[in-house]
Length: 346
Image: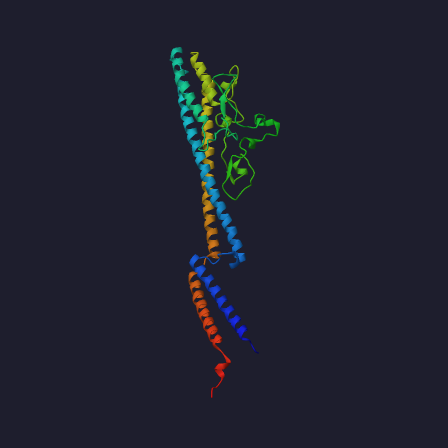
């Protein structure tokens, strides 16, 4: 078989270019430490790495969501602890003033401290987070949850969002999720993307929103007796219980047993809310731990797919360099071939 000079030239050149390209790719893998630097290096492996990277980014986002949620829950915990201290002092005064050893003037003087405690409680009820959102407005985070009751000066009424059907549990169509709505963050892959106030129904999300009428009330199903029996009745919240007590003290009368019982119910409600916050905080920490373990497994899997074996890479580099040198030497020798080399001069 005869080959032309141009064919030998092009074949030799193509061989050197191929060897040079292989050498460049191997050098890149050694420098970057990655076996896959572009999809063309390994299409199937590159696709798997992209999926793994996406999952790792999601885990990182879940961790950030959990940190945000923990910060807000810690703020709520601080508010409720302060509120508990306020109610305990208020109840302590109520028990003292209910004693027959105090006269009307002394009770009126005690009303001054109750007024100060009411102001402190109102500050807690209107607390906002670092983004300026009200903690206890349900989903209406831009609006104050409690405002002055225009029909009953000196009392507050809750205006944060809440499903009115909750007041009628027999209606059969109450929607408790309306009170928390979008104030949730996702902290894991598991569970549904359905909003629910019950963590057991939605383990992938943590509820941030709180309904002020529940936290500062006696719960959705109950009312404070002292506010319900007042004429006219006022909104059932712990601030108004304190306001009823102030009215009684200003009148020189001892706090009613209803007020004393309602203050105890308010403390119990705060305790219940603090327990719920603790449960949610534990869920965040458990999800973060599980996510970190999963992230480690994904990182190991990703490394097995895309990381370059250094020893293997150096071996390939040495062999490819040798092959390139052989190709170059062969190309030079072939190009030096000429029929005149075989002419025997006489």
